Image (tube, rainbow, N blue to C red; front, side, top):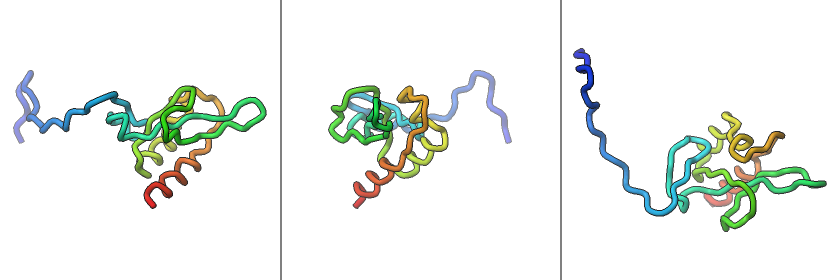
Length: 108
């Protein structure tokens, strides 16, 4: 096996399709994608209501949002990494169950 020359460029890889419009990063897999390809997730509640994760399908709810590919694997990665709390700047525990239910219903 031959080692690469110092300063040698890596083999070129095909570039992905260019993304048009706003670009967001999935909190699960950390890949970027078009805003229209990802789900926006927000924390609702406060005061006397218990905080809960909600999919913002209309992308219009107030507050900070986290973005997620509509894929069970990305949800599992986000859960394992505890990414929702960090992304949404929420200190307490958050149940990702409603997001999983939304994905199941969305897949139909």
